[in-house]
Length: 196
Image (tube, rainbow, N blue to C red; front, side, top):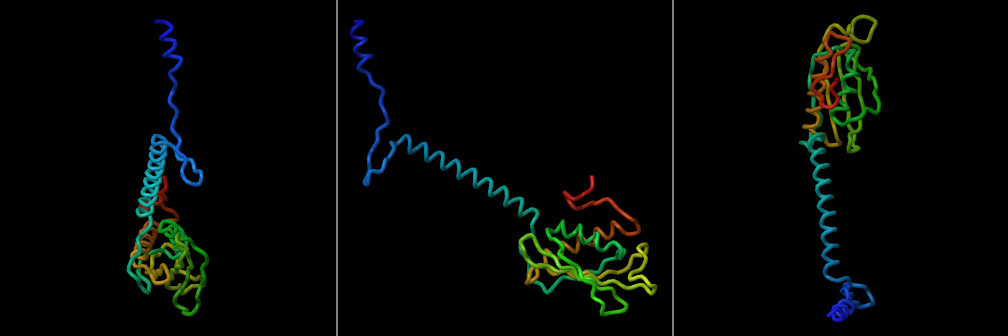
């Protein structure tokens, strides 16, 4: 019996994966290997899809969808004229814009007119024009302690984007309100840009 067991043991061979040679000599693995590869590929696609959805969700939350075309949106806000650049700098960042340059347009002796050129996160043009009354004194603007009506016109994207423009102007109104009558103020209502 012992020899019989040895005979059985010695004659038993571990089965190897069958290999099928297809046309042109290509190697075709057996069904188990194909199933494993398919499972790996499906898992990779699933992870990529989840990553894309997550990134899309972040983009949708922070990036405004394309709004109705507009020739530009205008809002009159009360604020200190000395706070304009600080407010635009913050609100541009909060609205996913970046300031490229600013130009003072001297066409009206009673009104100070500043034109800001910006670029969007999607590499499109944007402009913000600010008009505020000049002081009767030698300085260009009234003292910062006296809020005045400031006319702000925003045009974002070549064809305009009313929803994005309204979002920017609302941020400007909020920040100028926070800075009225003070030299500095905590940033509130700007999400991740809020001061701690």
